[in-house]
Image 1 (cartoon, rainbow, N blue to C red):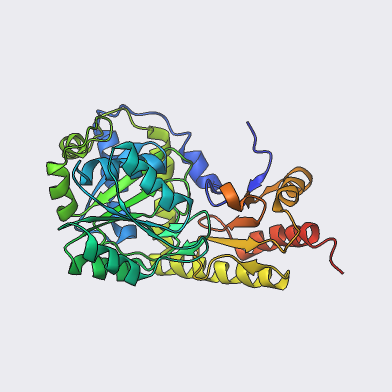
Image 2 (image 1 turned 135 degrees about the vertical axis):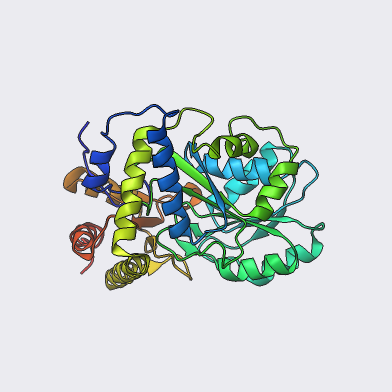
Length: 362
C-alpha cells in the first residue's frame, strides 16, 4: 500500500528508495552460501559503524525490544541485581524486562528531558554487588536526551561492571564507538539511522559479555545467544530470518559507509542544529538539556496541545511528526531526522509545522 504520508518520526524513518528496492530482491534459502555471504558482509559493515572490531554481532528477526530482551536474558542471571538507568520510556523498558524475569534492579533516575549523570551510576555501583550489570540508553527516544556513554563506560570498567546500552535510536546518528567506550553490549535495530524498514534487531557483544552469557541461568529459547553463536560460525541464524529486510539493511549500511562515517555523523550534527534553530525561531523550547542528533523534541507552550497540530499536519499536508508518549502526550512534538533526511527536506516540513502550530500567534 502506498504511504499516505512522509515520516518525520523518530523511527521508523522515511526509507530511501534504493533501500526499498533492495527489499524486493529475490529470496535466497537461508541455509545456502548466498545467505551466508550476506550475513557476514552485513555484520562486518555493522562492526565498522559501531567501531566494534573485537565484538560478535548477532541478528534477530524482531523489533529493537527483542534485542533488549536478548541482552537481558543472556547477560543476567537470577541472583543478579543490575543497575537500571531511567530517563524516559525506553529506560523504563529495561526495568520492565528485568521484572519480567523476576529480577529486582537498582534504579537510577533522571527527570524526563534530563540525562543521567555519570556520578549517579558511580554512586549506585558502590552499593551494588560485585561485577554488576548496568542497563542504560544512548539516545532516549521519548525525550530526545543523550546520555554520556563514554563516561558511563569509564565508570563501569573501574567497577568491573558490564555496560549494556540500548542504542536503537542513536546508532548511526550519535557517535558511540563500542570498543573504545567500554560498552559490553550494544543493542540496535534496522529502522532508524541505519535507514532500513523495521524487522531486524542486533546485539553486539564483547568477549566479557559473552563470558557472562555462557554462565547465565535465565530461561531463554529464541534469544539464546549460545544457540546463535553455533550458527554464527556458519554465517547462519538458527531460525528463519527476515531475508528481504536484511538485504535492505545491507544497502542502507553500504550507503552510509560509501560516504564515510565522519561525513555521516557530521551530517546528523548539522541537521540537528538546523532543526533546533528552527524550533527556537518558532518560540518553542527544547525538552532535553543534552539533545541527541537523532531527533528534536519541542515543548508545547502552556495551554497548547500538540495532538491536534500533529493530526492536522498529517491529514492536510501528508507529513507525520510524533507525539509524546504516556504523560508527555500532547505536551511535545518529536521530530525525527536520523538517516534519510536533508536540510531541504526538513525545511519544507518545518515550514508547515510553523504555519500550523503558530497560526494563532501574532
